[in-house]
Image (cartoon, rainbow, N blue to C red; front, side):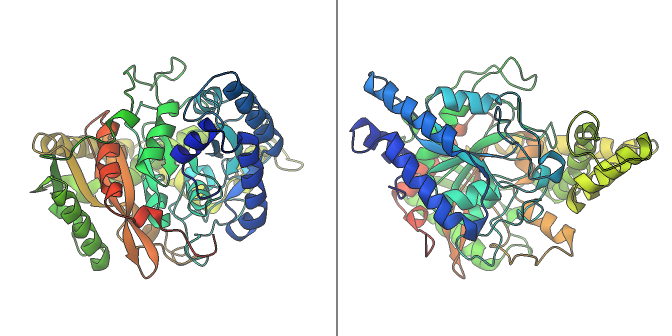
Length: 483
């Protein structure tokens, strides 16, 4: 049963081939057996999962149906879950039990999804390798000596290892798409505002967006359907109707205009990945797509702009974790200043501290105009580049990452080297566009992803292209040895 996709699980439950309770027990046993190798979960919620599975079976017995009714999933551990630890991968929130459910959690629970647990992540979603977690690094199931990508690495590793069919993630600069690429999954970052951020602990509020991680585009469509929609509790949520994503999966790609930016194929891209990306282009041409070279001239400024804006917002968002209102508190503080300093110094890890310091500096008097304001102007130029490109093409295609997964610890002494792994993904966050990564082959036995970007609220177009590609290739069906 662990090899079934979400779509296959929905059919199996509808045909009474197995119950949600049977499936949940099977997967919980599999997690207990295999997750010690991966460290992909922070918390397991066995009692809740079995309770939800029994309720889902009862709803089906009463005639209800639904693609997510009885389907097992997990949540990245920054989605608040009522009465369950929500740690953000940090010592700061190790003892925090959320008093309410995030909108995403509540919506999926209402649709009948079964929550198996909370997945490991880079601390406060800051990282590209899932090595900054207070609970230890997550391992890539394709090679346990390599990283799974981050910050949604726990969700990615768990789904790739067939511990469960799908999971939620969040994407601030590529944190769904990058781990999807490095673990052979399909991962989708929706348009900014498409999925509610209420109850999703913030890293950078103008960039963060929740989305699905699964093995297929079809499964991402099912999970996104349950997650998307306007939320009056979230001031950044956009009141835009949600289409039926599954209904558009089988549309023809005949005449679809795909743009390939020349800036993507620079010296920083592994040439073997470049070859796989061009092979995926050829596959889409066979399906009727028309390929056109385009230019995104301001892409070269994306990394410096992102690594001013994101830390600036992080320094503001994380100021609330002070040892007074909630979170970790140091032992025996001498006075209020000592309480603040030691609680934050002991509660936050090195990467979080680094980004808070960078952000506080960029926002400080005398530097705001020189750094933060200039970065926001560059952000606008990047968005304009995309708007110009989408006048000529329907989809933009390129690599998700410049390299395959690197070895654990390989970039720990050089944070900038890790930041450069986000070069292809961060532009979608800066512009607020939807982006998807899908499996495109292997380099040295490690997965490679191809990234698709589309205009605002065109997630259905991304899913359609990815689904048609997956109907004609088998990369997404490959399973890591031992799992």
